[in-house]
Amino acid sequence: MSQWKNFSKGFIKENPVFVLLLGMCPTLGVTSSAINGLGMGLATTFVLVMSNIVVSLVKDFIPDKVRIPSFIVIIAAFVTVVQLAMQAYLPSLYKSLGLFIPLIVVNCIVLGRAEAFASKNNLISSAIDGLGIGLGFSFALVLLGGIREILGSGKIFDITLYSENYVTLLFVLSPGAFIVLGYLIAIINRIKKD
Amino acid sequence: MNYLVIIIAAILVNNIVLMQFLGVCPFLGVSKKLSTAIGMTGAVAFVMVLATIVTYLIQKFVLDKLGLAYLQTIAFILVIASLVQLVEIILKKVSPAMYQALGIFLPLITTNCAILGVAILTIQKEFNLLEGVIYAIANAIGFGLALILFAGIREHLDLQNVPKGLKGIPIALIAAGILAMAFMGFSGIV
Image 1 (tube, chains in turn brown, cyan):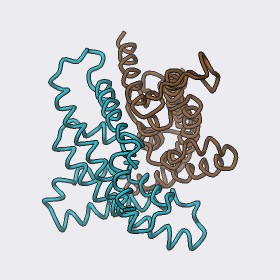
Image 2 (image 1 turned 30 degrees about the vertical axis):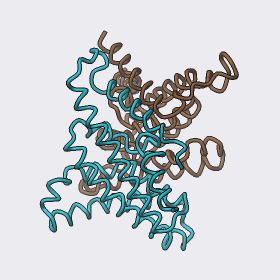
Image 3 (image 1 turned 120 degrees about the vertical axis):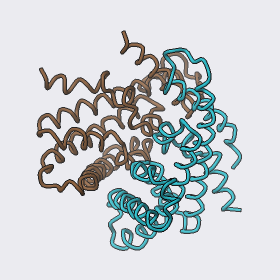
Image 4 (image 1 turned 180 degrees about the horizontal axis):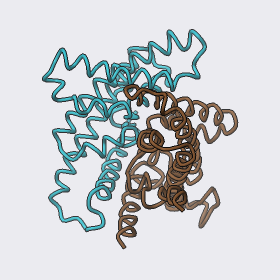
């Protein structure tokens, strides 16, 4: 039961995007469509799970003083793995996510979980925590990307919903990202209160 | 002329925060007051220019020479993290007044994606060192411009009667969206 709570907290209660307001750069930068959001979310989830596992395994051997730099190196290693794998197998997704793949390193969510959770807990709960938070992040990104895609180009996952010619550029471009996220957070705040 | 294009493109057309979404965390985090916004801008400008120079040299003379380009991400983040530490130590010794002003912002800068982003973009765009430095300075100005404008807006927002659900971050994000819309007016200049 407690492992389930550990897993599910990332979706609403401790959602990294809507509640903790972490990792805003990729959230806003890559969500011009739902599929981009999903790709980014899953890439981040992979890095989160793997770095949480490794950090929880080596936590006893790392001196406290060099803790943060060591965590960053571990995270950067997995980001490089994702970067190379995506470049090889999903080149079009890699191209549309662009700069934001290497920037997973500086995503505060990943370092935050390593420091706040994995460095204090055992392997299994750290892995579950990483998976939960990562999927919560993916959920937020897909939701935001989906709304922007529907409003901006009238499509969802590249399936046309109403008309081929429909385009509201504002929602595809950067102002739409800020405005849609603003209203989404307002709605989530409202849901949480009830 | 070429340099002018880089400067205008980086500050106005492809503004690093509002158009490229780099450094959004400090943009939302420290924009509540104008004075902290100015302090953060100073710290970011300082580290951004330094980091771009150092990472450029490392890329050209170490990674490319040894064929280790795939280690770029790891190498750059380590360089930036240690550079921030170094700057902190040196500032503390050399200029306590400046350390007082910028000190609290420095640790935050390691995880500021604008720094790493500009360092990687400088390599991707195949700038030479001088262009890279100009690009970094222009991006720092662009970051400062967006941050200081936004801090001014948020100081006014505090005095307004905002609907309850939108208070705080939601209304700030919507205001940022409108600010980004204003910057869209510059697209097409270069």
